[in-house]
Image (cartoon, rainbow, N blue to C red):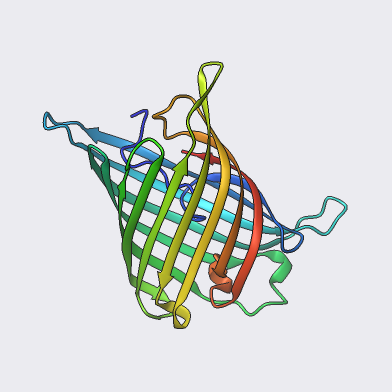
Length: 242
């Protein structure tokens, strides 16, 4: 299928995508390589849409040491599958996702290693209020996690768009996004991401897009090896949505 039934969440830092970004808090860079492949769609006569697909990504954080040297600090790996459904302005996605986290070569002899793996089920419902507004909410549960901890989390957010601007057969629009997660792990953590950017798409309904954005993240580190550490920073990035 050329379009996904459930559109990607723009302000979720760990939504599957590809990107290159710079961390404004210190001389650190992040590269994400990922994609969502929607393998099957079913379009019955009642107007609903159903889909099944797979997803995966690698998120890597690098130090900038000058002279073109960028040793790896940490890498997180994601692999999963999902089912999605939509009818009218409301869509749903049920994901099963595996993640594991590994120290990079620059920290092998510096940081203590954590055996970090997660298997999660996550349900997300999104409501396209109109062409300018989208809201979403959901919850997740970890049937397996190491280190073991509280196994539930809640997820919510929203996206506000400008009007579309035509550009030589394509569409450009600005957006403001917010993403929040409350996790039971690490004593209870609130992760929040605020994002302001510009989105460039082949057409208005396309899920595939290129974005340039600035965001502010506050919470614990998104990388599993450092999941107990508070982390607040600015990010400038270019993002490629599947």
